[in-house]
Amino acid sequence: MKSILLFAFAVCLLAAAGVQAAGGGGPDPFHAQREKADPAMEAIQAAVAKSDWVRARELAREGVAKNPASPDYHNMYAYSLRMGDKPEMDLVFKHYNEALRLDPKHRAAHEYLGEAYLQMGNLGKAKDQLRTLDNLCFFACKEYSMLKQAIADYEAKKQ
Image (cartoon, rainbow, N blue to C red):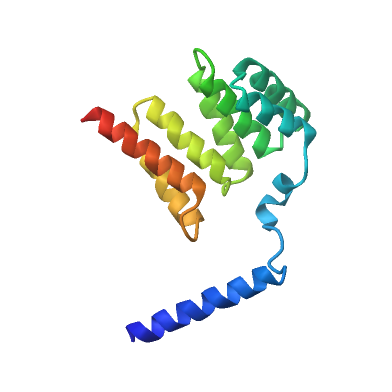
């Protein structure tokens, strides 16, 4: 029975690889919005890459004001708040939660929310986000791996 299951799994993997190689599969309908070029989001990401948290925060706040229905802007606003000096954690949690209200499958928001919980010393809530990511990612995704590592680092420091 086990060999039959392994064979079926291998066939599925090969079929999926063939579809991808043929250009099939298409974009993820839940995250199609994030695939389009967005100059404002690119500017936020450029500021983040430079660790210019003040600029990233300004740009993300403007993005939230112009498009309050965008989970990406809420996520990046919360991230830039969290990473800057003296983060306002109430505001951080508010915007991560809004991003997840708008898109419950937003993997980056789950990862960053888990990291925010670690900042606050709430390991249990961080692990809840890791379990959510485990359910969202068919195989381990980068968000899952990053949060898992952050939790491991946190636990190592506590010992």
